[in-house]
Length: 109
Image (tube, rainbow, N blue to C red):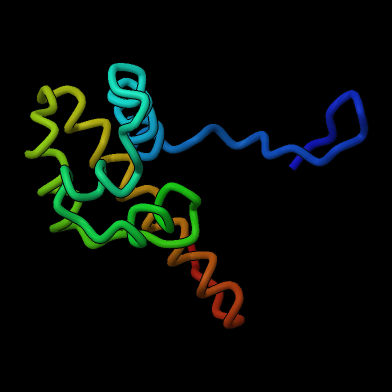
């Protein structure tokens, strides 16, 4: 966390590639059709709308199998798939490490 010019706290961590990709894809579709909703996007991806909302807000992660289905549905290039899955795994690993730290478990390097 950092502080901006107005004294507000701001998240300086860049958005993970996987979330950025999904948000940008959603916004592109919404630009073409202003009535396109997050619920419609979730249906298109084949996932529960509330799961998509929790994912995009950073509150929850999806299973690896779900990420694979999303990548297939979006017909990602091989390069985008590699970046997407690398981002997913980094996010999952970071969340697991944070959970262990909250439980007081330290990992040795």
